[in-house]
Length: 192
Image (cartoon, rainbow, N blue to C red; front, top):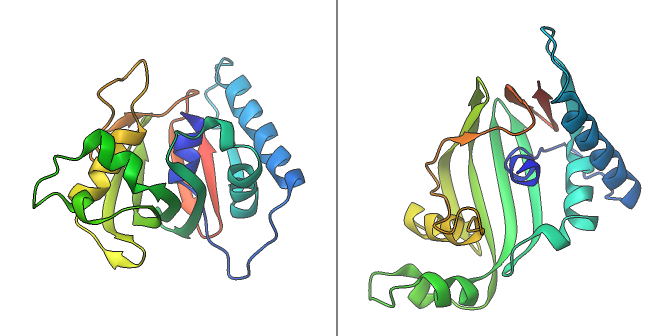
């Protein structure tokens, strides 16, 4: 779940910072800190700040085994004021085989292969809950309807615990006693 929150809350910087295994380790240590703080009660807010280079380094160097089949090369950009862009290479053949109706109006009937998918929106969090408000989505730079992105989200969020998956409009519980996530330009801050 931490990975999903981090993917949803990645950040943007003016200059492209290099992604390194060392920054991936920094990200991972911060996640360990957040998890450890979850079991220690306090009335004082505990912020932990993650940078875009740390987040994307983790996604590049450490997230591979955690990603579902058909999803690769995730990357996030944080614009500030809660706005994010999430990108990944999606194998639409995998999604189509498992989700498609095959009908004329099903967008996955017309797209095949591994293609870049982007979603831009706002992460809204408070009181230990969050939701994603989609502004726009595209496949290979071509705008697509929300329903196509919803199919992908539903497919990639299926687990043994939640075999029906999630919808793009679901409100979700934040893990590790996180109360909110503040998205700023180039970073996000987890507040417990």
